[in-house]
Image (cartoon, rainbow, N blue to C red; front, side, top):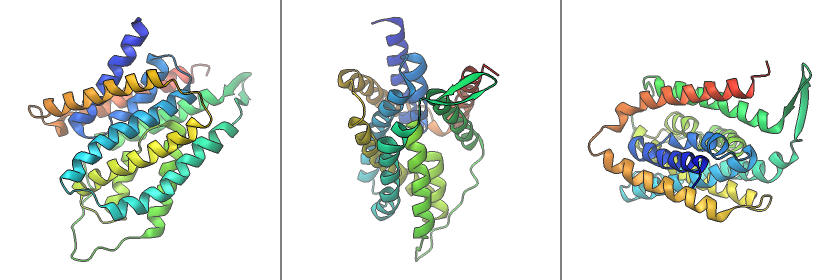
Length: 267
């Protein structure tokens, strides 16, 4: 195993550990690990990220289903527009984007640069969401009603973002489930994992038809992430994962700044 491979697989293990510790967010590190740690093209890296995110989220979702925390009706309403959007993005939108977009100050902006810059900006918003104190409160009423139209629109937006960058988008889904679907926070987090799993794996199907997938590498990388999840869940018995979220938020912000500087260094 080369030095690059070691860094990449260690990163996969770290993603799993973070997911096991704090229940989400770690998957956003998958794309930069694949691009900068494994030297993969951002397009193929975002496809692989969808698979890793989907499988990892599915493991968490199954655990929450056993606890009775998942609202399947909400998950279905949110997932339908989300997986249509993410599949369409991976199948049609990404291939349709030209490799060379435009020129700024005699510097050529490519599709790869644009995707990584967009991803860096999403990481900034994600880190801010993690660093902020939780202010979303929802008191469960006896009769729950929710806005199907707003949930559908949110599902489409999250699906497109997921399709472009290959990340789960939990920082967008959870507030939507709390504010629009009126779910308690614990149920919103649990339900979001199922939504992320569904839309990520369906989005990956769009890539199977467009890209040559290295299944040996992808499955081995994913297995390291899965192993990390169980390690993180074990460590969580001794360390409260919630306390680690702020530190992880700063880590995500640091990586986001690194990505933006690296990709926009020509300025």
